[in-house]
Image (cartoon, rainbow, N blue to C red; front, side):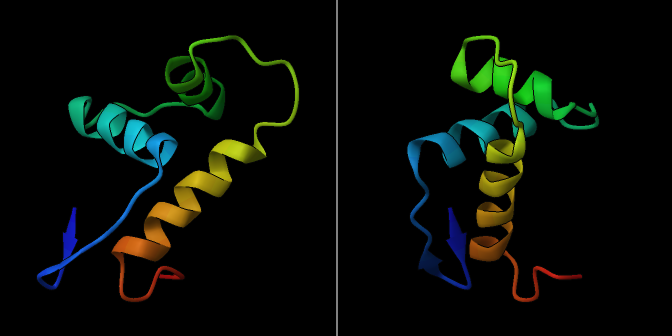
Length: 67
């Protein structure tokens, strides 16, 4: 992935989340669905790990990730 001609380095998990969302454009996923798909296992705890990785992707890609 590039931002203004500069390559952006993603972790494996960040890449898998981005790939899932890109391959399913227009579909809304819950945190639980993203976790199950990317981690390939059910999770019965705190899904903030998914939101952390999505926040990291936004911070890497967007100029102002807060907007």
